[in-house]
Length: 451
Image 1 (cartoon, helix red, strand yellow):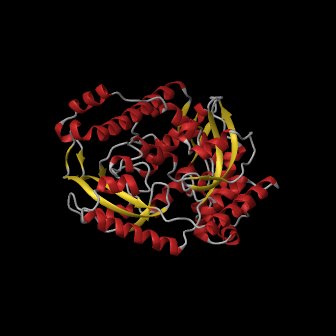
Image 2 (cartoon, rainbow, N blue to C red):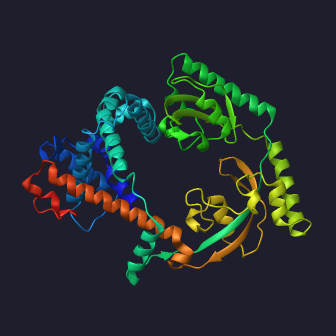
Image 3 (tube, rainbow, N blue to C red):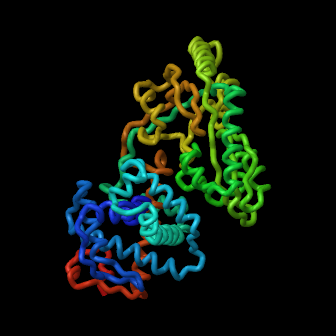
């Protein structure tokens, strides 16, 4: 799939190998082995990534160094185009946020800052200085590739045509799928826990206004897994895509301003506005969730146990119980039927289910209701759940009647990859590319690297 293609050449070795491996080996005598535009590829780039791949047990049927070289050629071609595109701009803030995440990774895996410096035989400042340009190049190439496939879409007729033209032995097998309904009970949060979280966020606001970096605090303390590693930064979004309370506060901020503490369904936030373009904003935030008091957790367990008993005794129907008592606003009006936030489909394969659900649903029969269990809701809050298995289908060759959404995703990935490959071929024809004769026998996937 196209998303795996992106990961394979943008992330393979870029983040860690050139640093970790350089520490562990004698210095390679460098030479330029390829040039794309004005961007050189060094022999040490290839040697270091090859050693790293071998150390991780990666194997290939082809020539590993040739494969690494082709990935680097693609990166440099993207970089050459990105440097000509005035719309691709990498800010110091983006680089610093990325740097902070990587340094945090090094510290977590090696030890303290002193241990990191001892390992690499360099100061933290020296490491950051060496990483800066590498990070900038990576961010540029990522943005460039996203731009290449940004407008690629599919239509139902294209999906149908693609499926009809697939040879029988190429039709994918769709794994076992299931549909389920759920009822959730959310424990109440005490006033004491509320006050504790608010005080912590007010202190973060004070520290930012006193000069500390908001993004660094977000990396260290935010409980939003999606944005914390990016310094709390979110993509440009419209008002309708945000929690109403969050949106009201964020859209009223001035650029650079930090909000008061805001309560949403996800928890409590402080927000900093980065930019505003028309009806969309770009902001960063720190999310903290109040800790649940064990007493309130126990009360929630009692409530869901009682509700389960009433349902099983037919004192109340499942649909009524979901509508009247479920904490899950997104499913309670639909009998508790759960749908994927990614695809909108109610059919899940086992590996697409939340871990807390998958281990319960495996042993259920269609129509059976599980005993209550503690899990997480779609906002990552602790909740008690009861689930009912609605349907289960066996693994089968894909067909458009049952598996249109899945086939649409497969075709979109293929179309994006084809678009990207076509772009590569076009750019190759108009970009100066030189590859040293020592790699003349490489069997590249794209033959047009050799002119």
